[in-house]
Length: 370
Image 1 (tube, one colour):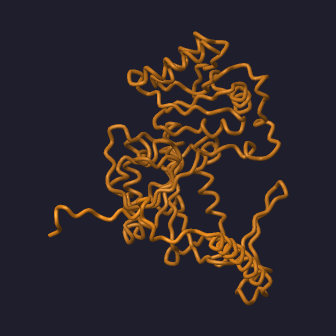
Image 2 (image 1 turned 180 degrees about the horizontal axis):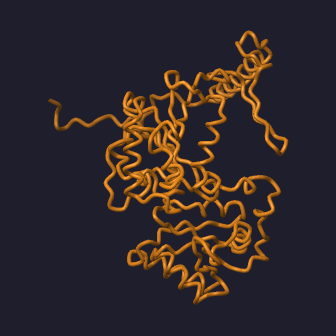
Image 3 (image 1 turned 135 degrees about the horizontal axis):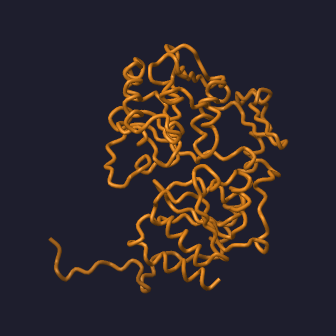
């Protein structure tokens, strides 16, 4: 036990004179150390960069090149996996599993892939088509590392091909016929859910595919999270944005040319369907109060109230701010589309107006001032 009168030594006290002072010699030595380290690093870097390729086991003559339409290219040396990646992906055919055809074309088989490839959910078709043409595709299940399960359920649901109950039962029926799915518990099977609803398009996903690889634009809770308790997930969830039309991402695309700020008619706009959402309906109401500052037409999924693709982007680029309120989930493609017309995107959670009174007041003040 120490004495109660014991006081620890104050090492950093100004009266502590045991530490040696930093003299000019120390400063010069430190500078020389830094300089020598710099030159030695440069020397070793130069020596290794001039070594013959064979000494580093690199075959620079067989690099991988990806060429782009604008003349650019991307290359990488064969280090790690390189082009020697041994990966085999099996893509299920719609006729080999009872139920897959319905998940792709609806109960009557009238919905086409060409119809589903359009719009923000087109990734479900694009990824399927890419894997069908991939050099990693195999037609032998026994040699496959991964298995892709094609389904266009978002498109099929939106077009009335299947309802929620039918989608759920059809998925369960299809999975019960996949022995390789049962073998791994679904860990090596890939599913695409291209909308903000995520895997909840398949209501029993948490029971059947919670160990699988899920591709979806929104990972938080895998889509819809309001009042839904998400179970423990052992699978791999990969996030990607919704599909944009190829013309949007190419240089010089006519539909994506932004307008100068001085020529934009509106301060802000919202171009989307109300879908009965309180926040979206409130924006439409505000647009009627400030028609010269806020553009919010009441759009529909089809008919004369639906904007064509060209017309849509002409409207989108005509405002300084593009409002992207949440719909079924916080994810919305409008957030990405605004990038290509250089419109500042405002991603707002306006579903519950009673909890966002201050947000509405702020929007009204901005519209009034500007």
